[in-house]
Length: 413
Image 1 (cartoon, rainbow, N blue to C red):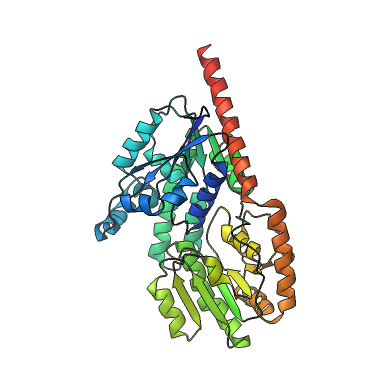
Image 2 (cartoon, helix red, strand yellow):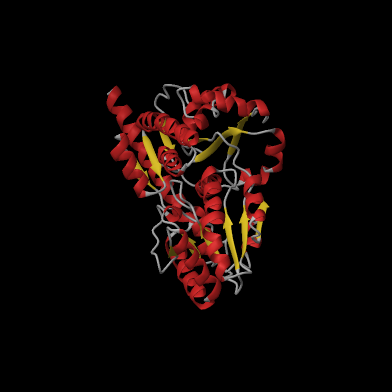
């Protein structure tokens, strides 16, 4: 014990490898909190093998690790997800419930940490109904209900549309109830914070900027090539929708102008139907699956595309590309929540025609791409380092802790 206040950080996911936007943001926040005002205990599911394999990474984000054993993945777990359609909770929330997780969290809360941070609203299913005098903080990465609504909007299958609408209603209720029950909410975009205030009546919500690890993502600039790249977990529905949209509606227009254009999709678990779709159309697409280092797979690209039509929160991938100096073409949703300027920091495009035009520009006008890349790197260097984000997160937690202590003292006086 160091005498510093204790911060309990609860996650429903093991955080390594940090190969998704949520994991990247969380691990970078923790990395920049470590050694600061709080002593950090991370509570999450982990196998013995995971704890051993990533021991070095874990030591960089927490002072103490407490785990529970996760259930093994199985076909039965997929059937369980289907059964949750009829339940009161949204499917992703219901599947995060864990008796072992609840017991572990309750045991750690009994140690009376000063602050308990829950990562994503889903993690609230592990919390007891009453957390007493502990300052409770909910770290949101999106407006979760908005993601469901956007999936429903773009779904063409009537059954899929019904499922997304059904889940949207449940997520609205769950997200509202959870956020209202916490002492402090942290959002990753001001538009998210505004939505929480407006739609859920949450008063104590503050925003942190999105950051990027500038030491890791060093600038190498765009290549004079016909290569385009995308990075993102390909087991996330929003990314699957975006790449399918790229293949079916955008890439035919690119291919018509640049016959040797190549596309690399970097991210774990790409669906077989997407791989087959690109192959059937004769496109030069490469799906890498999970890679240890996205920098090497990105090097050599002349453009970075974010064709998202669904999503929420902010886009770490955009800042990573900008830090590396790969010029970005993105939909509005793809850079939503980021303080970036179209035409100066990236090319904005929301239709198949404008996305294709932006990509064609960067694949053929390499001077334009280099200028865009240099301007974007200057932006992230000046305003969006992860050290700044960590300090902001710490300050919000400290303010919430002092506010709660003041309220408790007034109550007992």
